[in-house]
Amino acid sequence: MSDKHAVCRHPTNLYRVVVTGGIATGKSTLIEEIQARIPEVGIYDCDKAVHQLLTEEPVMARLRGLFGAQIFADSVLNRSALRQLVFADESCRRQLEDLIHPLVRSRCEEHFVSYAAERTEGLFIADVPLYFETHGAYPNDLVAVVATTRATQKRRLMQRSQLSSEAAESIISAQWPIEKKVLLGDVLIWNECPLHCLSAQAGLLLSSLS
Image (cartoon, rainbow, N blue to C red; front, side, top):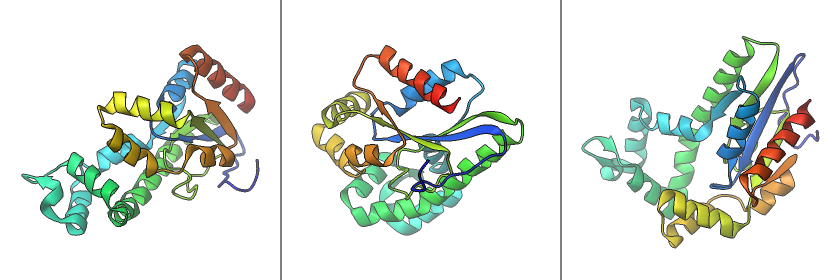
C-alpha cells in the first residue's frame, strides 16, 4: 500500500475498503456480490447517508440559509430543484458539498466504530462515490475503483434515472474523469462485462485481502 491514501492499520484482521468510481459504474452491484459471499460484512453507503441528511431539519435550515426558498415546496425540500441548482452552478455545488461531506464522513466513522466494537476480524466497506474528489478523507486499507467506459456509464445513468442525455452528461462531468480515478486506486474492477465476470472480480478482491 502506497502512502497516497489515508490508511488505517489494525492490530486485528479487520479490513476497511473504500469502493469508489463514477456514478452508474456498478459500485452497488459489486458490493452486493461481496455481501453474497460475506453476509456479515459492514457496509456504509454515502448516497444513502446523504439522502437521510436531506430529511433532517438542521440540514434543511442550513440549506434555506444557503439557497433560499427556491429549493423548497411547502417547506419540503425539492430534491429535483436542488439537483438542478447545484449542477448548473459550481459555486452552489461547492457550498452543498462543504455542508454535506463532513457530516457523511463523520457518520461513516461512527458506523465503523460500532462495527469494530463487536468483532476482532471482518470487512467494512464504505461506498464513497466522491472519494477522490473529497481528498481521500476516509481511512482505509484499500481503495477499489469500479470503472466502465464513459459511454456505458452515461447509457446506464440515463436508463436508471430516466435522464436526458444532457442531464446525464452534466452529472458525469461534475465528477472526476473515471480514468483519473483508475490511476489513483489500488484495485481496478472493470464492469463492462456480464454479471458473472463482476462476481468473479469480487471473489478475487476478497482473495487479495486474505
